Image 1 (cartoon, rainbow, N blue to C red):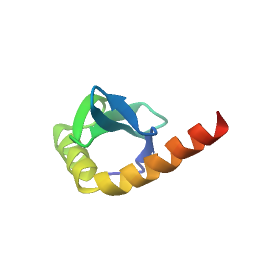
Image 2: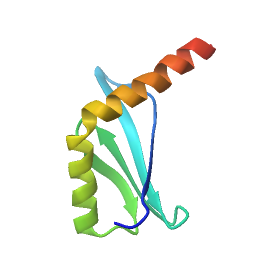
Image 3: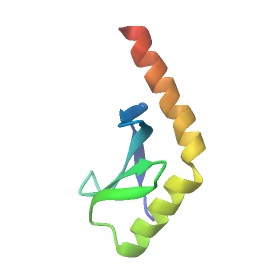
Image 4: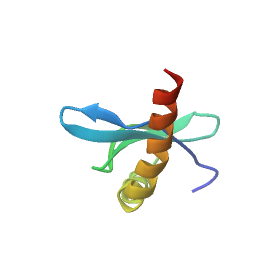
Length: 82
């Protein structure tokens, strides 16, 4: 895939589950895919092929622990600033 950027939220609660929302984008945000960990499910997308979406979902599942650690830093910083 060409020049895909990734952004993510801090850790959020959805019911009793802790989740992180992840957004992949390219072409100045014309193409995007929004997924969630730990499920790796892509919830919304535009401009990515089915094959690319499957790769992004796999990436989310394979890198869930690393993404959680990074999201934890955001969550901790957010709490610090309150």
